[in-house]
Image (tube, rainbow, N blue to C red; front, side, top):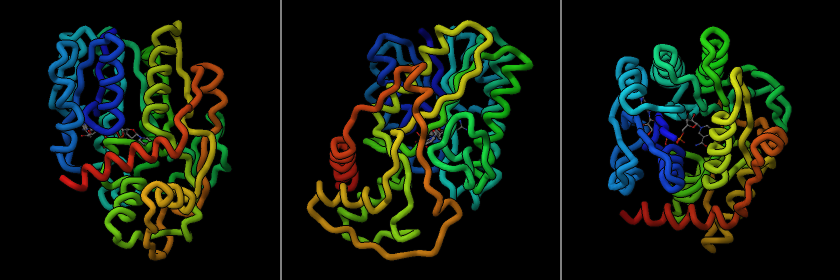
Amino acid sequence: MNYLITGGAGFIGSHLCEKLLNRGDKVTCLDNFDDYYPKPIKIENVNHLKENPRFQLITGDVCDIDNTIDLLESKKIDMVVHLAGRSGVGRSIKNPIDFITVNTKGTAAILEALKEVDVRKIVHISTSSIYGQKTKAPFLESSGFGQPYSVYSATKQSAEHFVQMYHHLYGIDAVILRIFSVFGPKQPPESGVYQFVKANITGKNLSLYGGGNIERDYTYIDDIITGIVAGMDFLAQSKSPTHEVFNLGSGQSDSINEVLESIEKITGRKTLTIEKSNKADALFPSYASIEKASKFLDYAPKTPFSVGMKNTIDWIKKELEK
Ligand SMILES: NC(=O)c1ccc[n+]([C@@H]2O[C@H](COP(=O)([O-])OP(=O)(O)OC[C@H]3O[C@@H](n4cnc5c(N)ncnc54)[C@H](O)[C@@H]3O)[C@@H](O)[C@H]2O)c1
């Protein structure tokens, strides 16, 4: 198969490109190397893939509809996996227009391009943040959208609305994957687990919210990639019309204190913490029901937390030594 992966130079995207190349697919990676974190990190994420003749890296913006139409036609794309986006609750509140532009307009632009050419399949990568603040965990796909607590959450909700609308208006078949917190090598330096590990290794204070009791659902990157590929294969094999939503998480919650303990067990070093007041996304527990993904995608995360965390720590150590 021939895939267009938007945001393919990022954390999740670069792992996905590699997995697809390893199983013999052709991959066109579209990424604008935004300034959310340093460009050299993203270049390194995909540098080793460039030698593969089935891989092509295109520097471009998902908001550029003509460019996407050109890629869909010239590369004979069968399916788009749309990962390009801006993430981060705090950053989204500080930069609302950037988030609206990339997450909402960017998704609409990809859908417009799909509408114009004969490519009718998209896997759209969404987030647990669409469940908002008041939904009770575990989150079910049928729980629907909760009250958005950040610009990030509102833009990802609206992106899902556009995917659904283009399905109904123009017959674009879609699988939406709502991903919970992911960790592993190549994760962005601003992300939670990276910050926890960095504070532990460097001995600097880590700002904690809610006494470290905030519960999140953490999944190792390899398991998420297996889930995304299963979602892609599900869509490839589905008859039209298809519009399905799946959660991809671990199906359990861990508090930040538990994550810190697991890091401390591996490094043998205590993390210094200082308590801060609540953030917008802070206190509510969030974890996935993965029953639907398990039933239809045969999704079953396998990596023990301690194994995934050891790989992550080893990678972050090397990054910090650079
Ligand atoms: N990492 C997580 O824990 C997590 C959890 C839930 C959902 N997600 C979603 O998964 C997707 C990927 O996240 P990630 O963690 O890999 O983040 P990331 O920042 O590493 O990757 C996003 C990529 O998109 C690219 N990009 C941004 N704007 C673009 C534009 N206008 N045109 C083209 N490319 C653009 C960036 O340069 C980057 O390479 C996002 O949509 C995010 O909302 C991630």
